[in-house]
Image (spheres, rainbow, N blue to C red):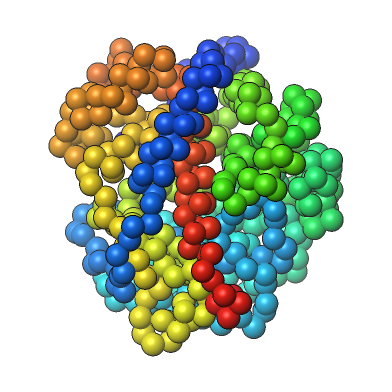
Length: 447
């Protein structure tokens, strides 16, 4: 897939205010949600086989390394990622194991172009994180960029400066600058006011080549004015990237989120239209919900740039050779595995070519990089026939159209971006449900 952005403006051309053309009715969005839920439930069912080893790399393929840090000082009610309450002794022992697992990956013959560190809160122990990144760069000399996540709490901690020169892209989970939204989501007491977060980001900007500001829309009480103020404050920070996630409701957060935190479903298209109108022109659109100053930089959805990725750490996923690998979600079992010279992986699930093609189609819609050539080169198929149902339905609702300049390229319209956002939201909600299933059997001794 090419890395061209969705929005391209000719040099020196007059930029008119962007007018998002989302015409898909709400009933159609609801129908698409139900269709996606069906496919997600079908394909993300945990009918896995046991596994104890990752496969060796395949010559000529490019890979990304994902590392998971499952610790947080506080646990947010709407977050469904794999995380535990921070205990320093456990966290320090975990980072040692993470570095050992990387050595096992190296022994298999892997090298990586990129590294993404997610959590939890990756910056709970900046000295250990710095040591881990340095170790990864020594083991895998092809790593050109390191992306990392943090919350506002750590931006002004004394150890945060240790990451300068090691992290190329720091993504900061702001969610909203509005104090009422922060109070409603229990973040005001934990992380401070919107203005305090703004000031912390402004001070930390000089440490990293790329700062990404994460915002969430779809909260109850998040009026057009509140969203616009969030977008304006993010723009005033002038970060290289802004990501605007829709609030995701999963099986396990339905009680805490749907009735208490989430806006009515019908608000989503209107709010998304506002985001497109506000950010397009200032930024290139990198995906349905990511915006950047440059259109060739890595961003949060690493699965778009890397078909294959390998995950280390408790609760991480890998996708290699059409197979999903799942690392143990038990901290105890993870530490025992690594101490005995085994990797963290414990389950695997193989997918058919049709399943993988549908997944790549979803990513193409989401990223605005839907290409007939990619499907021809990767799967040896004609996209229009291999995914006839998907292509026909998306063309019928005006989500995609042929590019008159390039027969291999498909243009994803604003309707398509809305659909891509919705489909990806359901996919991630499905992944969160899988995480919940894997965490459910954990006992206190596993944490």
